[in-house]
Image (cartoon, rainbow, N blue to C red; front, top):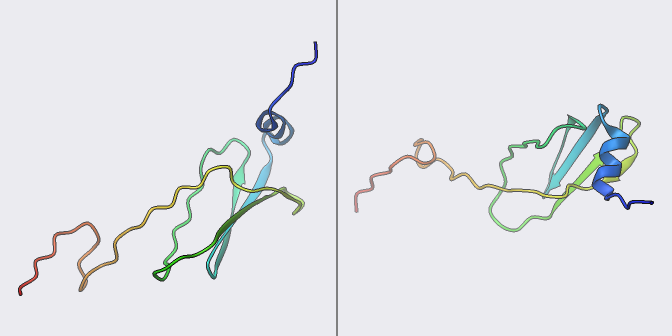
Length: 95
């Protein structure tokens, strides 16, 4: 019986233990970092201007061949500092 395998299973088996490069481009920021086949997450921290920006991702194999994009992306916004006060701090303002 020929059981169908998911694309994820095939990629995992074909690349297990290999080094890849993850590239992320958002707005004018274009970054990359090495990742291993077994990694479950990669984090990029970037400062972006306010407004909309297009986000694109790519995975490349060790030879630089483009494989696919990221299946899932989570973007978090950290509040900028206000007058030198770090994000998530209480800011007291006088009227």
